[in-house]
Length: 171
Ligand code: SF4
Image 1: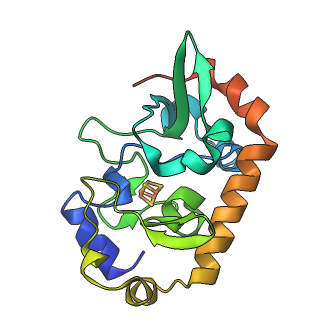
Image 2: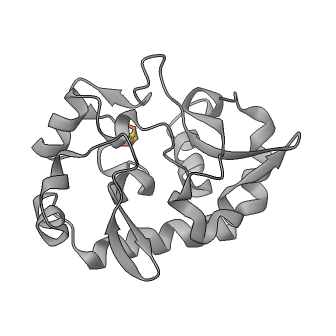
């Protein structure tokens, strides 16, 4: 995690305070392998249709329960920080989920876009997208790769993810 991201974290403006960092089945397996109790690190979050962030493939990431739509996300502390966040940044380091690695970018209709997600104004947002990518050591190619891994994993494991849903606390 670079210095720019750490500045954002200190102002509660980063993905580490964002309510919806979606996790893939592989990431859940990784948490289990590391000895975490699943219900301590992931949660079910109500999905609102106005949130367009994943509209191009929401059918794979949104699950129905008791008539409501949910996503499976990283769990948050009471102050809205991620349970993996420490004073020195992310405790998962290079193993942080794809949703964190891709933030604050996304891919829409094959274009890499900056997605500051409403209230979360990333410190990078005053630069153009290529400059922003360079600052955090990413490229359009790397963002496309995270996106495609993320999407493919969600598609592949949708049914397993849906089975995990009843075990989780809900917000
Ligand atoms: S897993 Fe790490 S990078 Fe991702 S939101 Fe949590 S603390 Fe931030």
